[in-house]
Image 1 (cartoon, rainbow, N blue to C red):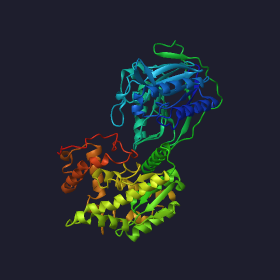
Image 2: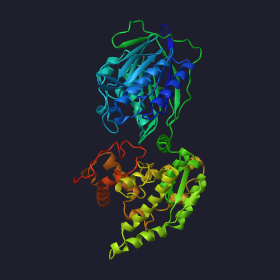
Image 3: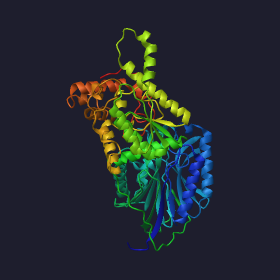
Image 4: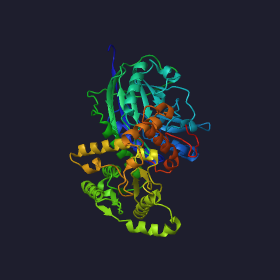
Length: 561
């Protein structure tokens, strides 16, 4: 490169923040600003809505909340020295709210950029809360031109992006991009395209952490103007991505929408190098998302311990393993509650799993409680054959016991239903659905098995007993019961669910692709079970379309194809 070349050191602060914790979030950002200054960074970057956490939802309708976040921003700015700091906040002007990025330097807020592309699909609802920004923002730091954008701004072709084309050396994007399986690849492909289109190096800072059903996976990126990946942050962990980027200082005076920052770029003999990150397998990626989502939901909600009801089956085994890994075995209690329908095989499997996890298994028989219920109900049920009523009583007794533990010991009950069961209603309201957080609510049954095998491979032995992975799935609410008595085989069911729910295919689309009887049964069960799903606890989103924020169907719905 001809002419003088300078270097800017970027500090990308991939931090775990909490919605509504304005004081805690502000303190975390200020601490990172000081660290970035110590690391001789020129620019430090934080995620979208750093002060409020993301997504703040209807907290934004409380004016005091918005004003508190602005007050916190002003305090934050006072902590900034010679470095340029970019952090997300909610701005309030003329009675309107904006999803904004503040640029702070030498104790002042020197510029504010408002997000121009407001997503309003899937889990996003930003048009409910924010006004659309109108202007681009370019910073001039030591002759380097830095464009500022927020999350969706980079995903949508717009006049704002066109205004930045060829006018920046670096493009910063602060983001709160929720995770789903493979989302990091989508981001990389999009940002690679943008860097090449706009002819600029791209610095992307993403949020990390769990918030209700969402997980933010970090995986911040630095991509060169040719589309080459230069550096990336770790996935599912806080990480400081520090990287030096070269540029040729521009002599032309700053133009429209450009703010000059009086900062002297330092000469450095050494270069900042961040540890390389290698993407993990599909199963490991999902497992890490489940761990992070579970840990943050529990701890950020003020709980310290969790309870899991073990059945001896694969779903509760996976939830127990995730809980132990996420929270620590000392913070997890496991309970086995047999009836006469529970096999010795299930007890042995539950006991072996608990021993492998280093957790004492509590065994509480419920046959006597079930018989008491049945005795009380006999006069009312006279002449009627036993059916799912008696089966569901067992699940509800177990739910009551688990919630008693929750109340007495201030612990959160983790439910064990998977996406295949939630799709078809193969679960009991106020029974196995009773609890505070549904860890694998968005994990299909076939993936549950893959995650268990991955965890065993990582452990180097059968942490989750092999018998749990090979025996036929059963709820054991009656003798010789199998899931396949009520549902199509999971290998088929999960494919139907994927097409019908996640791809929005219709019966007409799928007729001929799947066996007719199984297809009709799966769709009938799916459509009828919305009332159950609406009452299920929140759970970690790992697919592009999860039950909850992604999908909004009426509970009372008479439409059938």
